[in-house]
Image 1 (cartoon, chains in turn cyan, yellow):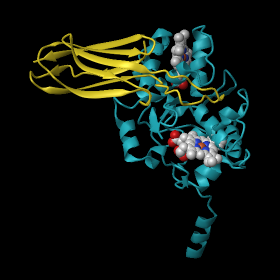
Image 2 (cartoon, rainbow over the protein chains, first blue to last red):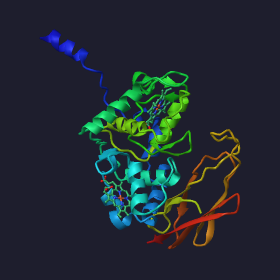
Image 3 (tube, each protein chain N blue to C red):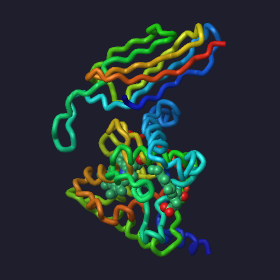
Image 4 (cartoon, protein in one colour):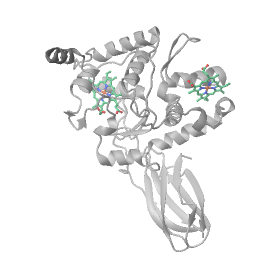
Length: 243
Length: 106
């Protein structure tokens, strides 16, 4: 019996507990994230709050601190109406363009990241809870996972080679974390700037000298779904501070 | 005008030293970095920061390149009378950003 149990344990796929990038930081960086005044990411949260009022989100959603509490923690979601996966940025831009008649914001635009940060910030402290409860989502998740484990670039490395196999190891000056998405948008000290998940993924592609997918490639949504679901249970930290 | 964050306590006892914090969203480009396209990013910085309490200058700072982005200033202020605490940042082009809060002395 005992031998069988051991065998079963060995056969189970290694499913590491999710650990936030926060736990891989130096105490000084953690303290900056925890400082409710000095966390520089809050500058963009403030900007998002101003845009929320200026652009007219209040008209339908009222005060975001109530209406958006917990919303970001569930994204990406499946939309029947649009017949596609919708990330938080896409949902925000959908409301902007379809409901407010505004021009779409390009990926990575500061206003987009600010609104994203503001909406995600309303879920701070709540556990990431991305549902994979329908075939469209589980299929997209599987495609995201495949992308994650596929080597690419001149260095021929997969996301997993750094963030799973070498978690906790040093890569030059960096300590490799699990590459979790629970803090996005993040204030990254290296950039001295805020960055969306999109920006981070591009940076990681660059670090292995790979071209990121084309802007309109649906694998962006698949990968975001996979990354966020991978962190299910971790607290939303937006705006996280990272090195 | 750039986005700012300021922290001034709402109330203070007369004679109390209170902590004041002020931060501004600014890239503070030092003139030595390159864009992802390989072009040199020119110097672009805030050059002056001033804090006034009851209309009087209490802190004045001259900034140079080499200060990190989104600079934050933290200092103590001795509360004497109720009145405004005003902040002013000036960038290298002379553009002025202001913010202020009222401190009530009890």
